[in-house]
Length: 91
Image 1 (cartoon, rainbow, N blue to C red):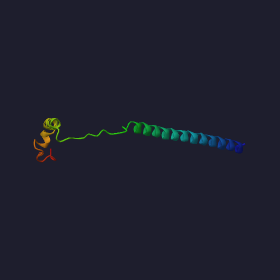
Image 2: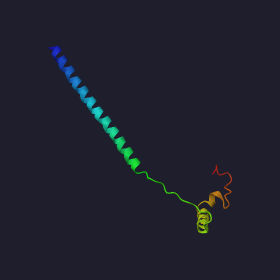
Image 3: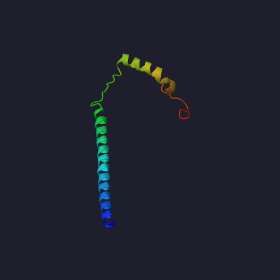
Image 4: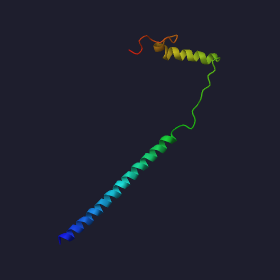
């Protein structure tokens, strides 16, 4: 009778092993699917083209605007004449 129990136990263990393998395979496939979906979503959010700007140095209005933007946002660190700030790495 012990052999019969042993066979039943082995059969049950084999069934459990197969169930675990199917479960792990399913979880693995779900992970792969999620990675593929994330890749598609991230690639679809990239713009197909990047806008390019042509800068015309002879456009006095554009130059004046650039000077104003620089004076407001950049000159405090980079200086009025692009001289920079002494010991800028230490601050």
